[in-house]
Length: 299
Length: 299
Figure 1 (cartoon, chains in turn purple, brown):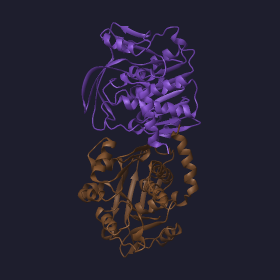
Figure 2 (cartoon, rainbow over the protein chains, first blue to last red; figure 1 turned 90 degrees about the horizontal axis):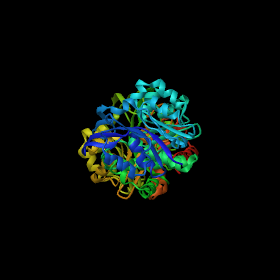
Figure 3 (cartoon, each protein chain N blue to C red; figure 1 turned 135 degrees about the vertical axis):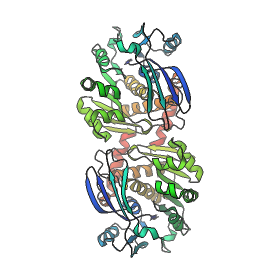
């Protein structure tokens, strides 16, 4: 049991049609943790700067995350500034300040190295590989990336795919890395690169899961009031991987239920800015909405 | 039992990355009929010109469609020419020749006027209203339209919405007519215009169903080889309305199953040009794929 998540812990500034927020606690690992923590103990592997507010550290601690491997470096915390317009499906990045992320060498304690479930959230593929090399007990490895690395570190990313069980990508990334427009063809191509399973996130259009044995497809949970979609994909991955880690095995029903938990967790994330909604999330909230979700399509 | 479909019977010329076809039998009513016929007797209300090949009439007859109200006019058959590129999600219209469609006044026999289920597929809203005015026994009325009418006959279309049970639109049309980007908000707005139920087709991303009582959302059936998506929406509507007509009542399970039959019928349609695949479709094919579809998401 337990899961290690490597990723970013960031200060996000975001503007959507519903308002503007500055220096919110964010980042791929933080969003992932908010949903994964509902299923299993989460060990955060990340880096922040000395400007990182103490209240955020206290907050992460209060959520029972293991922060042993959260490095606090003398530099500045990674910052992202973005804006969403119209249907809120695409973020426009206004500014990125890497700060301490540019010299991030993840460290991990001896105890944490024995954890069997790992999620390599979006950071430089070299950093992802560096951590994975230390995790000799790894049994279930998930990987996320982004278009920036697909463009600039394509070879490294493809090498890394051979080492992972589940590659999680959004539809644009899947198309861009595979060169295929049809998403099933894209998933097949990504599988040929080496990932045993491929999970393509389509935002408001749900998710497609592909392995040699199964194709699964789930719609998104219908959300009328999308306030801020930042971190929805990471929150999805946290629910998905968290449930798999808790289950300790993989079969079709567990995979579909994991996809559903990820979907539900993401549907809460978009209903408020940053971590505002998922910070308060309880397992009972997931269960309640999961039942409503089932009724959307089970006949 | 039985359903009346008003719409176009056309000669389609289409180009996709998989080839080019000229003067295929097509049109909204023809595509609708290919799936609806698997559930119930279909009465076709449409117009063609004297240039319309006899072999197509024979074909429609061979599919047990009631052609009593198919007008053969001295003019020319409606023709559409289009092209799909890339992910095949959007048709680029290259040419439209209305021909006999420009003076279409639908006629319907006394017997057919008593049919309780009606689908007003995409034609001029004034023509749709004209036919609906004659159908005094109507119990279940479905309506489709297109962006052209949303732009040019918005008022007429909105008036018509008050008279229908189910408005079927694709996501672009739903957004355009409602002025809302979020699809649930769009569906709510369309419901306020008067349609009791709203069904939003999202192509490869499935379908969203909205009424005051229920929200349903189904993914598309995963199709790897999309050859020609022309008529997929009409084929969907035929499966959906056909199953509802056959069921003779409406409840959540029946609605979701109708959405699933529509989805499956559409998934066959896109696998070949024009009606090539759906002309051969049997009910057992639908049932077989429906079970595979269930396994994509039921957990």
